Length: 324
Image 1 (cartoon, rainbow, N blue to C red):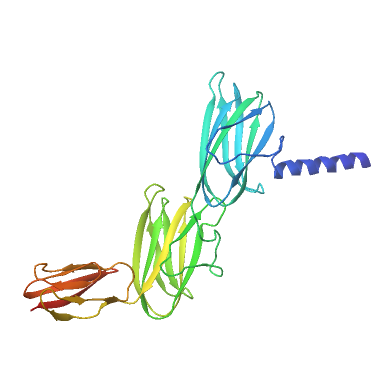
Image 2: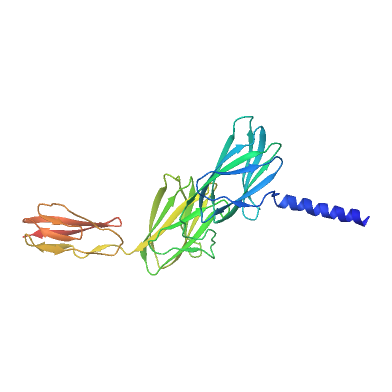
């Protein structure tokens, strides 16, 4: 009786192990992400596991080729601890023609297990993985209490993957009242973005929508005048893992150093813009009277009056110039 009970316990433990972890008939072989075919012989009624190492957050493309004629194969992709089945395919192969299959997934850095289960026929399988690194420079999983920190005027790249959360939190702080531009880029079908004050009691952007694709990303910029303090950005996705970018740019309003000036013909006057960020675009209302170069130097050409214009960060400024 004791032997029977012991046998039942052993069988129960074995059954629970099979349910938790897929059966692996062969030692795990790492398949490199080199965009080349790798061929493996398989036998009937067997299970094979191969590892794919994802070196960073990005998208992996896997092409599959099955030469197990007049047979059926189950193909699965699991995460490192076998908790999540990310891909599940059933492939039938006829008597003479190999079958092909493929998938692509956005994955976080880690090791993933590609599992094949054959039925009554053996043969061979070919696998060709190709990995595209998204160049992410933020942590995948973030919360309000542990957000990614946004530095001024720096672009941050993140991605929603099959294994991380469907939202990301960011925080930025401005030392005084400033104009702030918050820019977003979507490389996926649909993301939402929001902007809040520190305690989330004031909403400046409420789950705005942004659509894009991997080959044709879409961007949008929102501009605010914000008081000194800390602010939070939240980016979310509903169903489509992929890449996104975010940037916060803060600056004081650009100002021109003079509103009017008088110069003589062939003489120059240096104009300067303070505040703002980035390139300044200069122009003259009448180049026959005065011209201005890309650095703001004005040269008088002939007697008359015109306006010199400067534009930075979407703000226009002007100086009235009289040439004697």
